[in-house]
Every structure is written in C-alpha cells, then in structure tokens.
Length: 201
Ligand SMILES: Nc1nc2c(ncn2[C@@H]2O[C@H](COP(=O)(O)OP(=O)(O)OP(=O)(O)O)[C@@H](O)[C@H]2O)c(=O)[nH]1
Ligand SMILES: [Mg+2]
Image (cartoon, rainbow, N blue to C red; front, side, top):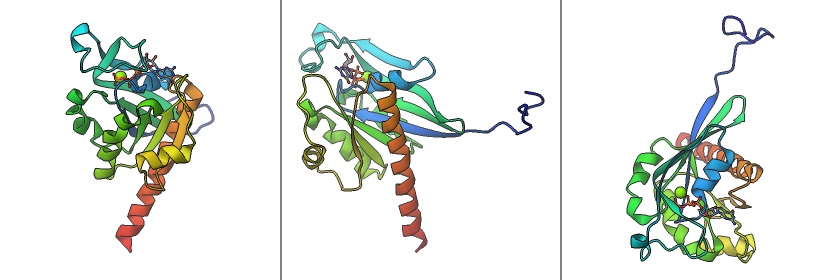
C-alpha cells in the first residue's frame, strides 16, 4: 500500500461498523458465542461462581460452568471487508441487568440466546428488546442432551411476533454463530426500512 492506496489504485475501504448485543438468561452461552467468532481476543469480565452464590446462581444444565459475566463481553468480527460487527455480550444474571441500558445504547440489533431446557430465562431479554423497539433474533443454542423442539413450538412458547427470526445454533461453532449474526443484520435492515417507510408515508 502506497499513500493510503492499495496496489490496484483503489482507496482502502472504510468499513461500516455496527453494534450488536448478545443477550439472554444465565449460562445460555453468550460469552461462548462472542469468543467463538471474535477475531480479536475477546474482552471478558467474568468472576468465579462461588459456593456462597449457589442459592441464586442456578447452574442446572450447565454444571461445568465455573464463571459468570459481571459486566460485559466484547468482541469483533468482520462479516465482509466493509462490514464489521462489534459484539457486546450482556451479563445474564438479574443482579447485573442495570448494565443492559448502558450496553444497548446505539445498538443496531440483538441476538437473544435461548436454551430450550430453561426457556423462561430468556423472557426478560425478549421483553426488553420488544419494549425498546430494538430488532432482535432468537438463537436457540442446542446443548447436547436438550430435547430438540420444532422451531414453531419454541416460537409459540416465547410468544414471538411472526417477523422475529428464530434460528437453531451452536454458540461454540464459528460458522453457526456467523449465520446468526448475518441473520440479525439482515433483520435489522428490513426492520429499519419498514420504520423508514412508516415515517415517510
Ligand atoms: N454443550 C454445549 N455447551 C455450551 C454451549 N454453549 C455454551 N456452553 C457451555 O455452557 C456454559 C455456559 O456458557 P457461557 O458462555 O459462560 O454462558 P453465559 O450466557 O455467558 O453465562 P452468564 O454470563 O453467566 O450469563 C459453559 O460451560 C459453556 O462451555 C453449547 O452450545 N453446547
Ligand atoms: Mg457470560
């Protein structure tokens, strides 16, 4: 590259950067998801789960879990040369939810991760984004041993609007997570276009 130009003589592309939140209940795989796709070493703010927290920190289903997010996760992924996502993972436990307002500032959209063994844990996140009109997609994180329910059943159980996308995923798998993130961006674009039309007519 010479004087800010690539060899082909094209100016370098300034990427569009978008902020995406990763939310959902305790231990659903938010930190795992951000870590699976981030091309920078993800920033994590995890603290060890302790014996003292056992009555409030319900780790059933994720017994191998030793730490919990107390502030946020942060990662970055380039979906294309000109499209970069900044990922902000929220803390799952209710006592840290005061962080969510801060984190959702300026977000284009959100992923709500759900675990079908504890679906009720993501109600609060679904509710949160519905109330604030932040477009979101539900990713059903398929843990081994969890019963696979038809997508339509999960949609009904969560009482989702028809236009909210719902995708099964594996939070540990980069390609699977990328698909979810592309889904959020597409959904948010359609959502924004719909709002724009509603305002201008
Ligand atoms: N089998 C399986 N385990 C997973 C998957 N996703 C996450 N885990 C495991 O589940 C546990 C919880 O994952 P985390 O990523 O810490 O969950 P979290 O949503 O960030 O949790 P909090 O920050 O405490 O709310 C970890 O032990 C992960 O290794 C998955 O898709 N399959
Ligand atoms: Mg976490």
